[in-house]
View: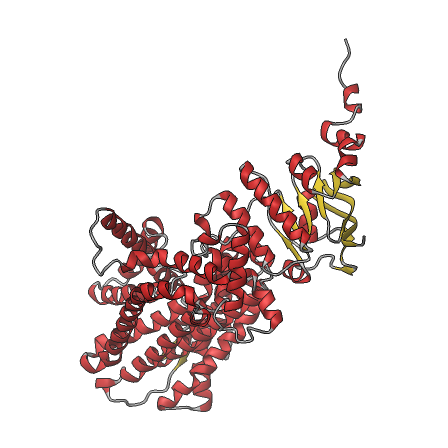
Length: 371
Length: 259
């Protein structure tokens, strides 16, 4: 936008900019506040139970964003995300034990976990991405179970025993803190990557594939290449998260590292907040993971958390299929439109409804400058 | 005149149905060619085969002397063939401008503008060109709207606009006048003529005979997957084989019991 300034658009810009700027400032301010709160959280809340919740939540924020980066943008709903998670967990675990790495150095192995998952994503993607919709979902589930079976049955994965992390003494009071901050870095990195993709030509191609893959191919989009790249990126992040999780929990078992509940949770989080949006998966994870943790300690029967997950999945699909963010935005726009029609200024000035009409009006301004 | 687009002996069967049977057509460079025929005669299948959406069973497709048989849709587009679909297909949850930018990917890649994959989608030059095309087709004021909010006719115009983003040498239009009001039909015909004057070749499938006969330099008739007649509209209009194709052959009458 900044590059094609011309005289004819100046008047429009001076009128529009304050509104746009106000929105931007509000957003950036909100993000800054969130980031500060996230950064000081474990310093303020020192109860180990709550910092543990926070680490789990960050792990799921990053995982949901990573899922969304491929599935949300491209519309290919993957239920095999745990393949990457487990691969990352096992890779970091096995390498840690093999190289006898101890202490915080283990964090340095996370990229290798990500790399292993990315390598797995190549054949996984080449097989699964040949088919669409329901067939794709079924194939991702099948491949997921293949990986779980392999973890059970290979000698090097430790079978039922899984892979344990070495025990070492860290101060119990702030034991969770390193995990928390590494988790925060991963989550922020995933969000930034997802933002970059959403606003890039690569992201636009993914969205075009979501809307109509064949039409996109007919307009020069190399669909397989684009899908596979996103799949690999998503796998890389999820693999790193898996490695962090292994280090945090201290053990990877076939049924916990390759956990169907992980797949469902991640998908549900993204759908709850709004699949394909930037903030949706973050919001979904921030709501759902603490809820699950709370249920796990409140109800002694562990099935309550699992049953509620299923019920919530049904409820979201039936009543909120597009997720909180898109539906909320729509309601807000409607509400503001009604207020405007009654002649009352919407709170926060006339800016928000204008942001909807702003794009076409700058567009028509631009047409003037073209001539 | 040299043939820009040519198919030679293309056959394609779906199960037991022979959709294309030795279909050979030629589109002269710089012309507006029409492709007509009864329902099910294989017009859309021929489009699909040319643009890489279906593979041929046998036969060849050439663009400007270069063989493009069974090339993937993105390669065909890159080679210079743009097409629209009978039932319009736009990216409904993207804005009109974003729709245009999607179609510019190949163009930008070729210019080396976007080496960086995280570069912002659609540079200023692309957006300027997109606005020019949207103005040309008369939907510029919708540039910021989601494509799903467009009317059927506007979607047709959007489809035509984004196909033009890559400056194709030939555009295949599948029923551009179908389900569109008369004013818009006139406007679409005008635009096709203007683009043709600037050097774009057209191949048009259309059932609206006034549209085809008024616009096309050459008309080819498909019947049961075979090109039966090809020539100027005035000749094709009166050819007995065309009447047969549309109205059925005289043999059919023999089955009617007499008396």
